[in-house]
Image 1 (cartoon, rainbow, N blue to C red):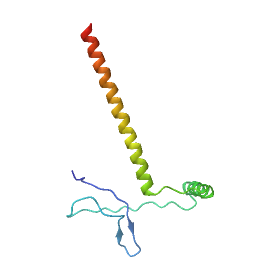
Image 2: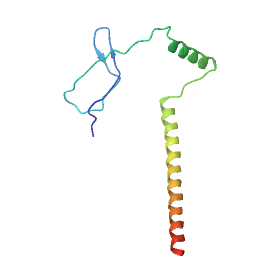
Image 3: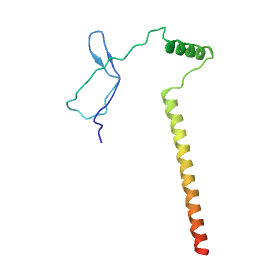
Length: 107
């Protein structure tokens, strides 16, 4: 089912053109666009001060952020582990149900 609304962040260039980050996952056809300016925090805002301190500390420690491929691979590993865990839980529940039914038949 196609969503009725999609929210994406973009950029208005100095010449007034709207740039979007990539292809939209909606069918071709007419659309309605509403543009809302995003607030820009001043450079001395406490949020940006803290972020710069974090980034500086990471660089000082030699931190290299994972690539998109590494993040995707890690996500797939975690997903597979959870799927296996859920299969095991379902197996345990089925065994418990069978044991309970056998016990009820024996009483």
